[in-house]
Figure 1 (cartoon, rainbow, N blue to C red):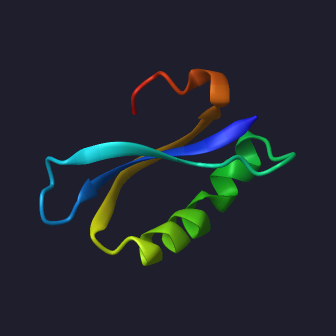
Figure 2: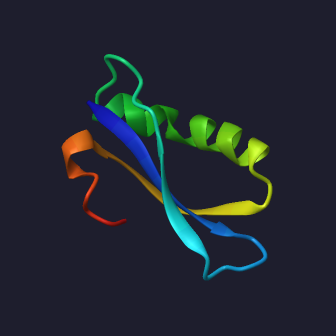
Length: 68
């Protein structure tokens, strides 16, 4: 399964960052994840105005241990 992994930082404290993961969409491969990433991240950002998305990637769940 492919998940959307992204790094967010507090807008008021750019050094305070953490990795977040959006749950995988069923039956979506890497290309589908890449195509849906921007709208999904935009929806997340709308509900988290105090955070700023720094970077993101689509990866297999097994690869989650690898930092962005």
